Amino acid sequence: MRKHVRIGLLGCGTVGEAFAELLVERRAAVADVSDITLDLVRIAVRDPDKPRSSALDPKLFTGDVHDVVKADDVDVVVELIGGTGPAGELVRTALSSGKSVVTANKELIASQGPELFAEADAAGVDLFFEAAAVAAVPILRPIRESLLAEDVRRVVGIINGTTNFMLTRMMSDGLSFDEALAEAQRLGYAEPDASADIEGADAASKIAILASLAFNQAVPVDGVSREGIVGLDREDFELAARFGFVIKLLAVAERFADPTGGADAPGAIGAQVFPALVARDHPLASVRDSFNAVFVTTSAAGELMFYGHGAGPRPSASAVLGDVVGAADQLLRGRHRHIPVGPTASLRPARELVHSYYVRADVDEAPGVLSEVTGVFGRHGVSIRTVDQRGSEQQARVVFITFPAPEHALDSALSELSELAHVRGVHRVLRIHA
Ligand code: NDP
Ligand code: HSE
Image 1 (cartoon, rainbow, N blue to C red):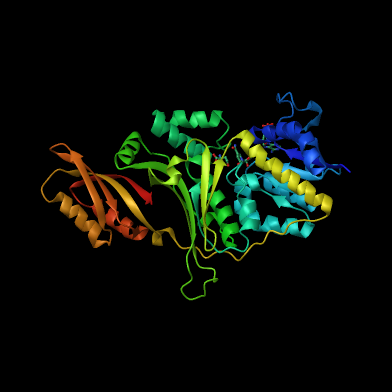
Image 2 (image 1 turned 30 degrees about the vertical axis):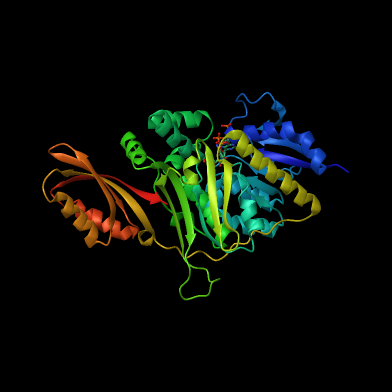
């Protein structure tokens, strides 16, 4: 027998409208495969008088969010407002009113996930958030379910669609930073406040969520060190290409072995977001436009790759709709899924994490300058793999590629370099992902 589940939607912007349209479009097909009929009964927005999609009944819209989160005729609330306030309070009210919640809000889950999971558990309802990390790509459920018994060592990937789209357009088509960002915003990839994308905060939230689930330790988003793509220029792209690299915004989380514990002891976690040089023949180098890819390394399964659209209204709506069907199914079976939250992770500071580096500097063209500079690197324990020097009679542009060294070693080398009279400036430092 067909069962009806009533959906209340909070927010009908870029993702919310695509979700509502997809629900209308796929409603009959979902009912055919699942015996569940999803009824969209109410949509709360900031401005109910704004023109909306012609696929949506104007009578569904309200300007009062409580018409959704407290309504007796809503079973599942879909939160697509974004941000932590008022979205956090609304999610809490919905959960405590006995409604399951589906959200795409990575900022909220990364900052308040453990508390919200506990509130969902206490209320006996579900809180699903597949679209919060890597949009259309099913990755959270595989990590939580298929890899539950696995020992996950590392999660690394391109997990922000906006910046990957921008970097692709800037490198391949010569677009300026502002042109590429405007195009990403037009296509609905960017966050309502795009600084979250370009400054790395969005990727930091996502890697905190992925790492918390993968390592079963709560990784606070504040513990993720981050750098975005602001300031990268044409010369960076040209030099990267000359050395056989592309530039990608990467997110990396790694669980280090606990030297004092057994193999299963929860070792410290390092979590970072940074623009990196990626070798042209590395699989991540071919991830272009708004596509994302995540490699998960486990002890038994080895390396797994998840790939697909990481941003955009319809891909994100697809993940939200999948969660809504899952939440509706659970509700009808009278079940909810407990989300385990391990202890708060012990985080390894970024300064102790090890990378190879690309360093671009301007130095005076004079005898002995290069050996003086390489001597500084050597004194701080940073070995140089290659040096490329080009320039005029007065000044040279030098690119150093180093062997792996901890970040504190590079930082102290750079600070001594900045004191040298012959060093005109260190213009860029990028980590290299091998
Ligand atoms: P938008 O800014 O496009 O839409 C926000 C919606 O929320 C609008 O409909 C707005 O109403 C409504 N709203 C805002 N404030 C309130 C309020 N106080 N009360 C009621 N309604 C309110 O956001 P997006 O669709 O871009 O993002 C939504 C969420 O999806 C975010 O958490 C984002 O991180 C996430 N996400 C986005 C992806 C993407 O590719 N863009 C992918 C995956 C997740 P009104 O229309 O009247 O202004
Ligand atoms: N702004 C985000 C991105 C949306 O570009 O990846 C998907 O989470």
